[in-house]
Amino acid sequence: MRNIQLPMSEADAKSLQLGEMVTVSGLLFTGRSRFHIRAVEDNVFPDIDYSKINCFFHVGPVMKQENDQWEVVSCEPTSSIRFERYGADVVRKFNLRTLIGKTTMGPATAKALAEVGGVYLSKIGLSGNALRGQVKKVHDVYFLDELGKTECTWIYEVEEFGPFFVAIDAQGRNYFEELSKEANARMPEIEKALNIPADYNYTEVNG
View 1 (tube, rainbow, N blue to C red):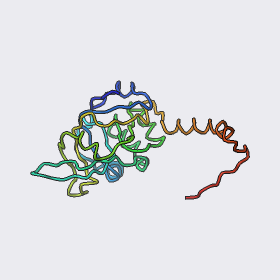
View 2: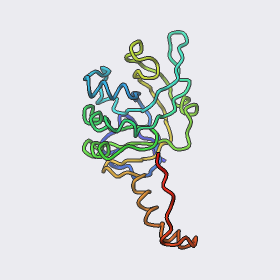
View 3: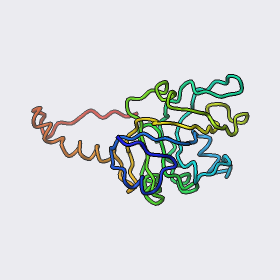
């Protein structure tokens, strides 16, 4: 398993294979819904050098302050697919090389990552309490008074943060989409092995 130094280079991003397990070390910034909405709709965003901090961690962390120093209590990645409406615009606006979150993202964000040479990394078998120990320092915070500790933007210095797996690679391939296609292609074989009739109708569940 490789440890990738942040800011991730385009060469490193393009070398990562779909499904590969990695950790990252260096500086990243955090954000959730308010970051996306404000950056795209209002052109309001933290005054960060995004060429040096180009890793966006989708998280609403639990933080505490002791002796004027902020510490991470927990930093469980949040589901990234709910940011898909704004994801591609944010990737292009800040030329982001790395997104970290949970679950997956959609085709628009995958296309934008392919354009800039970036990847989406997803959690697997991790807890926010485990990740907190890999945050070595909280460097800064933006919009704390305005947005609160969960929705504001934090700057973390991390070391061997993860592991995460490459859920969208720098060519725009999506691990979950390809897994779904593979599963669907194998269904006839599986149904035959389980003696499920070819004309069997599965119950449809409407959400």
